[in-house]
Amino acid sequence: LQYLDQVFSESLRYYPPVTGFVSRKCSEDHKVGPYVIPKDATVLAPVWDIHHDPQYWPDPWKFDPERFSLENKKSINSMAYMPFGVGRRNCIGARFAQLEAKLAIYRLVKKFKFVTCEKTDDPLPLICPTVIINPINGIWLRAIPRDARI
Image (cartoon, rainbow, N blue to C red; front, top):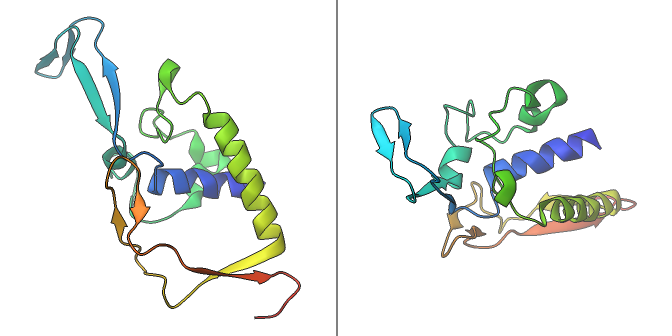
């Protein structure tokens, strides 16, 4: 199931569940380069932008599960991958959500082969009306039972 983990992690990087910001409050004055962030200031980290920043992700618009292989995973900046937030205040249900989603994907892929339909847009146009990303025209797939022929 290693490759499922890689695909899942890359999916969360490419299409993070929350595209908005991870926010933190400064507990003391902090200097970053020439700037001083004052105590009690709120700092926002834009998840979508960080997940697609070539500084952290070579060829960021390429869907590449190999980024999360056992060999490559070690070189990922821990602050550049935050689909469920980071640190002590990350999503409390992240591990459960990931396990539940992987189990559902495993069961579906075991029983069906999924292929795109003519109605499926490629590339997928997205809209972010709030902080959750959505495909504008939906995602259209055909589910073909594994014991059937196309």
